[in-house]
Image (tube, rainbow, N blue to C red):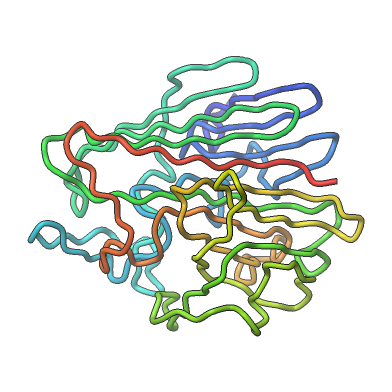
Length: 305
């Protein structure tokens, strides 16, 4: 058998729920519960196109010109979004991850990111997936394995599904952001605005319809446990919920308008992020990891209806 585009496939099962995690990128390929697809995932013989299900580290989203300054030194990373002159979604999306621990309903993967042009530090990443009948929990830990302080940010890129045959237009979206970052033609932040009174106020829920979203939100409303929730449901009220803990201060929503057919607007990307776009350049919410220090963030998925 020829090698699969995303390498080894790690199948997790719990009651009637099943998830598939992949070796390449340490990402999440599929998640089903009660016979329904909760993710708009991809097949085992497909690449993870459009960042589908991927881990975004050591920075999420876009970095203008791939350039940033850290502790007085200038750094320049390769441009992975050449059309806009941006470096996007970090450095580990298409690299192999190794299994650290595995059970029938969980897997923990690790990748050691070695120094390279534009990111000359040693960063150890671990991502763990744990499946229960009630939902899927994802926990990411980053550790500075080098001898100099390093900059770090992280995100994930699942596409939520509301049901077979449904598109984003047919679904109701509830999301917690009180502030939306305004962007330029390169999808980089140029300011911010309150969502109140605008079509982007999703806090009470609204039918997506023809609304186009590719924006980062912050000032996230949270429940008593400190969790922010996104709910994405079809006309029958069934769909997918995503929660994110306090480590994720920003949330990117993307209705998939530039995704090629037939996947265009078929799933909603909901991206928990520890920092906003272009954070390495601006310094906003960038985590400083001293040698030996670690940071952890968690998010998860659950069926609706």
